[in-house]
Length: 85
Image 1 (cartoon, rainbow, N blue to C red):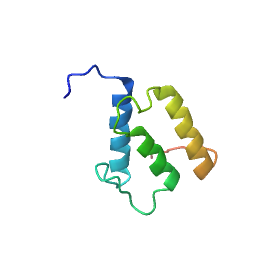
Image 2 (image 1 turned 180 degrees about the horizontal axis):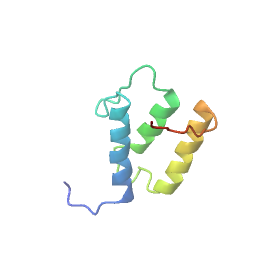
Image 3 (image 1 turned 120 degrees about the vertical axis):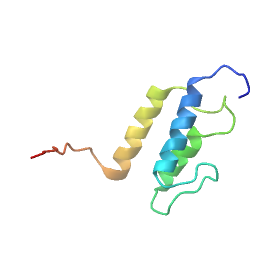
């Protein structure tokens, strides 16, 4: 809208807004249901900073950080087979 060249941070910003909404939050107000861990809220807040230059720009580094966060919260990921009959 500002006729500025988009950066990778724009995609990260919009993805974080989608994640906030999927978690039942309001990305405009920055509110979340009580069940959303504070560390997830902080991660999303950091990805939705108002200043476009302040936002993360490296999606690969950010996904590694998010994977680590998920691991700290809920432990190692496990494969669960999905069987259809």
